Length: 223
Ligand SMILES: Nc1ncnc2c1ncn2[C@@H]1O[C@H](COP(=O)(O)OP(=O)(O)OP(=O)(O)O)[C@@H](O)[C@H]1O
Ligand SMILES: [Mg+2]
Image (cartoon, rainbow, N blue to C red; front, top):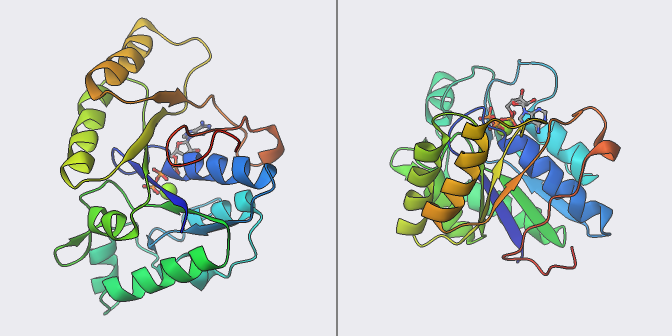
């Protein structure tokens, strides 16, 4: 089973964008790509929900249920959104759904929910799902002030759990980065001992304009 798990330093930091660009890069290289997101919340927020953008980027035929088995309207943590709907997220069902999604494609691109320590069900965190799936992590992070701490905390949390980190992606990377942003990139690479890539501001509505995003760990360079 081959795949990648895209997490982030928190919510709204570019996980979907990074996962979509990775999925698109793989699809453009001729791979069949499956996508997965354990739970989507904030469904009513425009323009596209995460699972919809991921499906488009991957050129996947998966149904909503196959990509994201738990979907809720309120923009809340998944454990709370589930409770508000009178449900509980079942870790076993998540794993089963992820394995089914992986079995239907050559490579699975998973997007986490929020950051690594977000609860999915009781004590079962996003990080536990990432460990169970066993894919290398890609960490989406903001380029600006505050990102060194958030990114190093995420790296520490990942490595403590034995997760392999394929890289960090700073997004959206400005066309004229400031000294702070350039220094953040170098400092994270240096202190985090990790490859740091960047994504420029993209037109999310037109995947044909996206640059490729290649990972050097967990995949052969030929992607
Ligand atoms: N390279 C980029 N080009 C254009 N927009 C970007 C880029 N990176 C991030 N964004 C914008 O930042 C916002 C957050 O990105 P995204 O939805 O990918 O975050 P997320 O971490 O997946 O959020 P969530 O926790 O809700 O899943 C979006 O509005 C997105 O359009
Ligand atoms: Mg997202």
